[in-house]
Amino acid sequence: MANTRIIRACMVVVFCVSAGNLMAQSLSVKDTLAKKDTTVKRPSIAQDTTTAAPVVKKKSFTKNTFDGNYIIDNQTVMVPIKGTLEFDIQHRFGAVDHGFKDLFGLFASATMKLGFSYTPVNNLQVGFDATNEKMEVDWNLKYALLKQTRDNTLPFSVTLYGNAMMDTRAKDNTTLFVSTSDRFSYFYQLIVARKFSENFSLQIAPSLAHFNNLPGYLDAAGTVQQIYKNDNFLIATSARYKISEGSSIIVNYDQPITQNPANNPRPDISFGIEMRTSGHDFEIFFGNYSSLMPQNNVLFNQNNFRTGQFVLGFNISRLWNF
Amino acid sequence: MATSVLTVSMASFAFTLVQQTKPWPVPDKNAKTTNPVKSDKESLAAGKSLWNLHCASCHGKTGLGDGSKAAQLKTQPQDMTKASLQAQSDGSLYYKISEGRDDMPSFKKKIPDSEDIWNLVNFIRTLKK
Image (cartoon, one colour):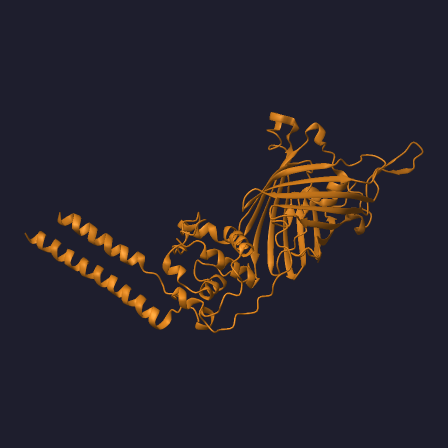
């Protein structure tokens, strides 16, 4: 009997508190609407105001020609908005042509790169990368020179990209460094792109790689002969096709132009999927390029797509806006 | 019987606690700002693209507040389809998107063009049920 009374008393208390809580909430909302919160408006009132609308600058530039800074191994024409800090994690596994011997390259030695870039002013990005391949680091600049307009008065965008890469390995018999400048190489690219539709974008990028110092060999007469030329040209072609709001198919074809005395670099075909979110850009793909520094790919790529020498790779970019 | 009633009572008590939402005052000036971007096909397409990129992960693709990240948040994302939300002025929605609060991030740096935020507001109007 006593227990029943206690339970009843508890029920009354709980109901009272619950009801009181609901009433308090209701009153609070009414009070807020009446006094503080001006956010809830009747639809008829919402637009019936006299406040002058802010001047909205009608942007004439085409947006989102590509989803990020990278399209597999190439830079895109895009320069992030001012104040964007980007952190890139890139990975290339071994070639798949050894099959199960190294589980299609997954157990082979891999190339990795970490990079940071920042856009301090509109249209200009500065960056720094480091890769485990030959302990190389680079400093890079990217500048959006021209932007495609919506009304097609300018039907394409143009961006300049350049880097200076340094081989930081210790000086020994294999590295052939005589002076510090021997450690440096450079990569320049003129990127021309057009967004043809909401789904399809294409870019072509004439590119130049310059190495200050390259290996050679001694001929029968004891004269030093070049294997590679110091300047190598290449045409990079990239395309994106959106298959949904957040996903795209991405492809590249990179054709070397310069004929070298020996070891001519091979062209690259790559293809994959890109997924974009508010703060990330993910790409996973197959391609022939196994290096993560562009000048290395221009000059040293020996993976042949005709014999199936593709590597699995991924790029992850994290973006912050300051 | 008494135990069941007690359980239901406590559940209703807990429910009233969960349902409390913190008011989000918007300055009069911002709330009364009119939307200068016409809600046409181009604006809605741009708004939809921005919604899918920046908003859908929390608010859900159709605005129900059921995005993939919603369960990880301290606050339940707003259901954009509700009449009470849709009754807010365009200026209020613009202000909230731009400034953010608590789990809702500020988008004024991520979406720097005001035209884009208005496009987003125009798209949010299409989520009404």
